Length: 196
Image (cartoon, rainbow, N blue to C red; front, side, top):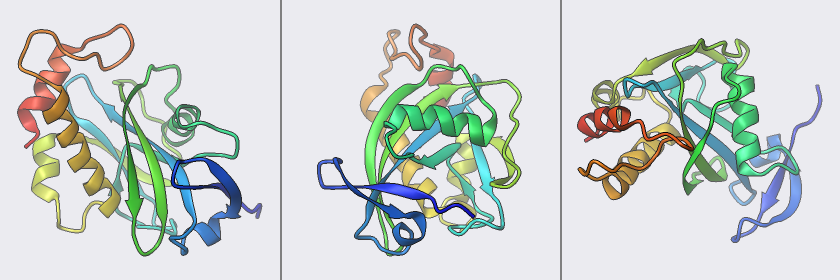
């Protein structure tokens, strides 16, 4: 089996070296980078993936729509596009950058860039990485928080998403676009109405 390497970054997110995946997952000193994508339906529901039982981190738990480590030489957007295709079979959809964040725990340290997209087409997920996918309403997600159903990282992501909405979405008719050239006001209204 080929050894997977991650780029290690400093406090400014600048690459300072490389380390094997096996070392990065187990040594929080090795900060590496990850891209996430929140995939919403036009109804305003969020696609989540259930991690395969064979995963080394958080097996069998529901997680962010798309999440993957950057390959050496990639930027966050390139990784998001690649991971969306590899994990869910979604291609050629515009992405909107939302925010950067950090994940720090006893297992790993990650710098994360999160993007958003709308997609109602077929999901052809990677069966070796993911056991199931489905869309969840905000109400369903809120009802199941803190019960061990979701990964801790997704629960943090959900709170960041809800915080982002409160800061950037207003009640005005003029709404921020989800994707380049589109405003999807109905999507934002449904999400805003359902997120606590």
